[in-house]
Image 1 (cartoon, rainbow, N blue to C red):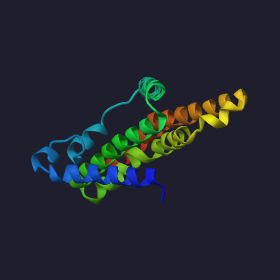
Image 2 (image 1 turned 135 degrees about the horizontal axis):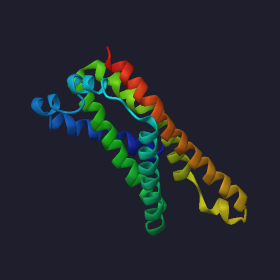
Image 3 (image 1 turned 45 degrees about the vertical axis):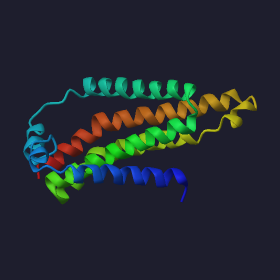
Image 4 (image 1 turned 60 degrees about the horizontal axis):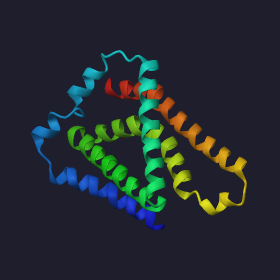
Length: 175
């Protein structure tokens, strides 16, 4: 197994462990991930267009920040650092969802996260594996197409996060 995958898995497990060690029943029951708080979400109306634009702006602001930081710090350090942070956050949220709701929390977690995380993860994987030497050969068209592919994956992730995930979450919350 590659070193990066091991680091990501360890980061995810660290997030799970951190939440389990800081387990506080009051904190978990009063979190936004308990069933009562989630049930209240099913009564809220979402303006999908507004939500999509907010997500689009937020995600591309993050992508821009990562791109700028990768110009200042070696790309492999940025890729590993961001992967660790994302792994810890995803692990922590998964642990909180399970602690607050049991197995149902795991189902909720996958419906809330998985549709768009597949697109974001694919874009992240492509970007982090990109080699500068490959593009030095003068194939600018290839570099532009690669960048467009990453941006399309990010856009698809934003669409899934804004339009598909809320529908899945609302259908899961009803049960």
